Amino acid sequence: MNEFKVTKILEKVIEIAILNNDEDLKKWACLETEGYYESNKYFTDNDTVPKYREIVGEHRDIFGRTFLIPDLKFSFINTYRLRHATIELESLSKRTENLLSIKDAHICEIINKHFGVKIADFVFSPASLDRVLNSIKQEAIRRLRKYVTKNELMSIEKNKRVNETNIPRDITCSWLWRNIPIRWWLTFFSLLFGAFSLGIYVSGIPQVKKILHYIPGYKVDLVREME
Image (tube, rainbow, N blue to C red; front, side):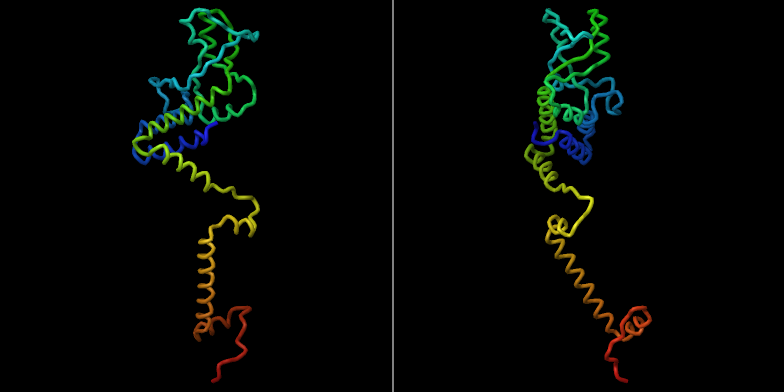
């Protein structure tokens, strides 16, 4: 599989696109992220599913038989361009079955209309998804070339992954000590010591001492000032 999740890379592409007011780049990344569906607000009638999303497989009828056409000019029948969102592709690529299947009602209707065969689904190898995901990543790198290099994009995502820390439900002192940077601890103790020192200094001012005597629980000095 890919070293980095394509979904995370596309999220970074969207951030860079917004930062540079690049609407074309943002649209492409949003189409890849959310899928090439009519429900996606970025998808228009003029948009098509990119060729790098094309996989090879075979259609099967309702009896499980492979649908074959000897004529080479119809070889495109055995290919399919995936509309899925990248997060769906990543999820499917983790499946352990030998073959995956999808059903496109529109394609099934076309085959039934022109060839008189009732298609049940389109089956393909999960390995095809790795190639598609890698193609999407490479396309992202190519489109970002004018803003960042490949190494910069990969380092951004790597640093993001390293810096992400899973916060447990029950936070202990041991967890805090292991996960909080030492400079934060030094700052915390410096502020704590400063507040303590300031409290001691303020409590020694006569006017303040008179006010503190009215606070419940305040302990009066054992050695009082001599009149």
